Amino acid sequence: MHTAIGKWYPSTKLMIVLTVTVISMFSTSPVVQYVLFGAAVLLSLFSGTIGKFFSTFFKSIFIIVLFIFLVQVFIVQNEDSQPLWWFIGYSEMGLQTSIDLSSRIIAISSIIIWFFQVTSVKDIISSLEKARIPKKVTFVIAATIQLVPQMTKLSGTITDAQKARGIETEGSLWIRMKAFIPMIGPLVLTSIQQTDERVLTLEARGFSAQMRKTTYYAVKKTALDYLITIFCLAILIVYFVGGPL
Image 1 (tube, one colour):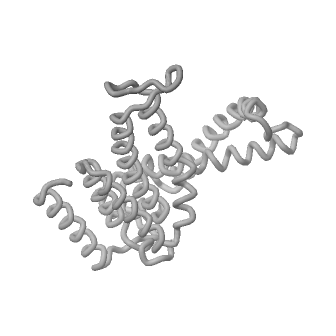
Image 2 (cartoon, rainbow, N blue to C red):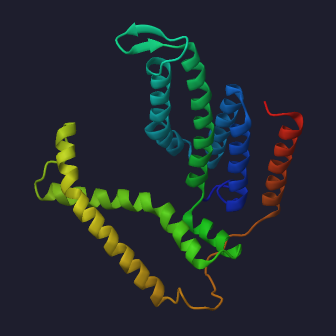
């Protein structure tokens, strides 16, 4: 990332994520959760990723939160449940539970979304290598982070190939399901092939060689990174000394 926040050291941004996560886990007030969500929104705004942030949020987290709300309030039976129609009821306890759970999910997931949108994989790998993490562990972490984007890109390529061959891939849910089933085979086989090619490429570059390697890309930790880390630690200390809200 080319913004000032995007240039922060990965461990600095991870410290912010851990601070928000810990406070969210120990807090019992939905207000605190929404304040943490607001902090994630502000970070995304100053990082220049606010559009991507809300796009990802509404496509994933919002749907999960809405599902939890509907199930907890209208489906799950509690002591104060009042029947409305058939198996659907209304519960004040379910409403409070859904608010508590959904606000916690919103706070934690939003800061995680921000982290991955402002932190590139090469920055994460560089910081892990500086921390003397074993190469194999670093490779597994990098492959895991890149798995979903690679599978998404690959499925898009396969879908375009199916369209070029006259296969109907858009329309009703049934049509899309029929188009998805033939795509599973090429998706899995191509993923295996790409993994094999990646392994051969790494071995050709001396991945398993028992010697210290140099790198052409490295991230540097600045004084601001140390200040932000200390500030996050201070927030956690004050939060727990003063008593979780």
